Amino acid sequence: MEYIYESAQRSYEDFASGRVLYNARGTTSFPVRLASEIVQRCLRMLEDRGNEGPYTLFDPCCGGGYLLTVAGLLHGQRFKQVIGSDVNAGVLELAGNNLSLLTPEGMQRREKQIKELIQLYDKPSHHEALQSVARLEQLLDRSAIEEVRCFQGDITNWQEPFDLPHKANLVLTDLPYGQIVSWNGDRADPVHDFFEHVYRLLEPGRAVVAVIADKSQKLRHDRFTKIQGFKVGKRQVAILEPKG
Image 1 (cartoon, one colour):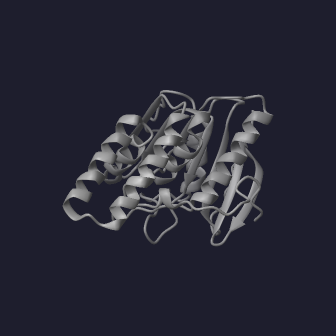
Image 2 (cartoon, helix red, strand yellow):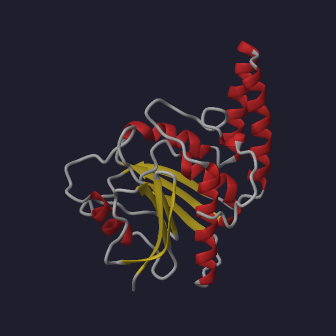
Image 3 (cartoon, helix red, strand yellow):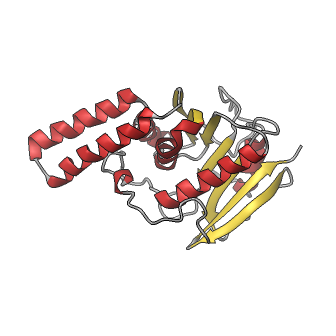
């Protein structure tokens, strides 16, 4: 895979899970460089289709909210709403904490927590985290995000009430693929059901969907056209747009 937008190697240590962003056992992070590259490709596609934004960003398999929060921090000037959902209610508190970092109040709360850790333990890692907070606050200064929220919902169950406050322009999600996280339920083809339900949540003619998965999953659906597809290590990435 060729990086188009994140072509220069740089440090992403400010986004390390557990440094400023919250983490917990059983949740996953995501390569920051790859996340930023995917988001920027999607933003360019939206622009090319006449949608200048600001956009509603939605992750329907958000887990602890790491991918969604990183996207919002790096490209918050392009988004108006950032929304996450997950079928697992147990991860939503963590997701809410991470998404709160997309607001000045949430970042200030995290800064206070880190300062308290410095008073208690005075570890070098805590001082480094405080420096990261200062740099992330600079990203927030240019953010256009007005609303962040997360809720419980099963994106594979289209019969379940699942109404977003705003239709999504960019769906960005890392699908479950075993080991740490996996699909819940007994659906024969959860990926098909995922696409079926996502289709109903998109702003017509003004949306793209970026899906990350392992190489065994088939990222296609009759209601979508694949615009780009590439592989990175054990992952595959597909960027699609809805038909009609």
